[in-house]
Image (cartoon, rainbow, N blue to C red):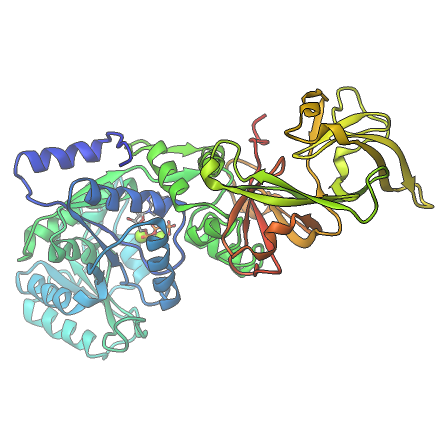
Length: 549
Ligand code: ATP
Ligand code: MG
Ligand code: MG
């Protein structure tokens, strides 16, 4: 079992269990199905499901689907898949706020009957203006003192569809002078003639988030209702409803700081805009901070969980640097990903003294420290591919790789020496010619001989030509913001390479298989476009952090 860092919420839960305040803890993760989950949601998922797991409680998955205008079943399905992919299980505790619409409606009538809610005919604009400001009390609505009977009649007619959108709302009658704006007679029901993705056409009035959330918590017996800090000001309203309605339980709300990640945007509105404007290929573009995007990029669920554990849970807003997320997948894959050789920008190399037509197989360990990951055979012959930037005709000072007259080791194979190059009529190098030293085969006594550089290679006749996509951060500034936030997109966030040469063993990889391509970084076979026989790889992360060096 992973070690669990203490945080203030774990302490609260532990105390509540110790003191007997609750027998079992029940948390929930309540996404609105109006977009795909992102890494910020992962923080909330790990927190809520993690508490339930660590304290033998349960965590509900609840779709907070009170706004049919923006919601869609496409999102519902993807959210479920992402939560499962992250490694969490809601068992049979899947809920929809829309399943409580009947109960919420009855409770709205209950408030009306108690003289604590009224129908307001003011326009939305007028309601906003009349709420006042932080320094000025609001103005009471001229409709505030309607009788219970009149309010009930109007509310039922709202439900029956007699009025157009926006004609009337139901408001809680609390306090127009409250220093907390949320208590200034908040709107709790509005008219919206829209088909609901889950409830269908049954309703043309919908409860507002604040009227649905706490009551849903109460109906499900949630003990700890954990949300982000911007809901702190809503807490008095959350509690007002629980005190003024005959709810079956009294959940408590706790707030924590949301995750802000540098070099990314996380508001669903902005993510949707990137998708709609074609700045990315979709919600699952490997540069998106969505869970489907991170998955496609090659992130493992383990790396995201350990990231969430690393950043911890607190109550002060802060920014987490993207390098911390990247390091979480780098260190996970360093442990687990088998190694392979791939040449991304190939240059032909010919070993003139290697017999023509001959070939040999090297047995190569899949992981330098993990013998249990096994080994594979890698073919070797006279013609190889190496990286273009592993050769310099006129080496700069300190260049340790291949240049005329110099020796390097071919990883897992021999020491070679460059004898000459061949150029085309334009002067571009088309072939490097070398001699190899047969006594320096890896594992043989002669292999002890020290040379400065080691480079990777792929046997040319055996190589598999493949597409590799090099991804980098989507934004070039740490905090993309302002109206022109889109102008801060990193113009080099993706580079598509088509003629890459992969070692033969990669021919049959299944989508989502991950490797360290030696010296090049961590790569994952694309889960959409890759197929055995025709692999397409995405670079998940480089071997070292190249942004902060
Ligand atoms: P967005 O601002 O991206 O639209 P949201 O809060 O409206 O996010 P919801 O679907 O309502 O999205 O979020 C579901 C849960 O995930 C909520 O409990 C919310 O507090 C939590 N959550 C959303 N974003 C973050 C974040 N950046 N960090 C931590 N938790 C988050
Ligand atoms: Mg929300
Ligand atoms: Mg939102």
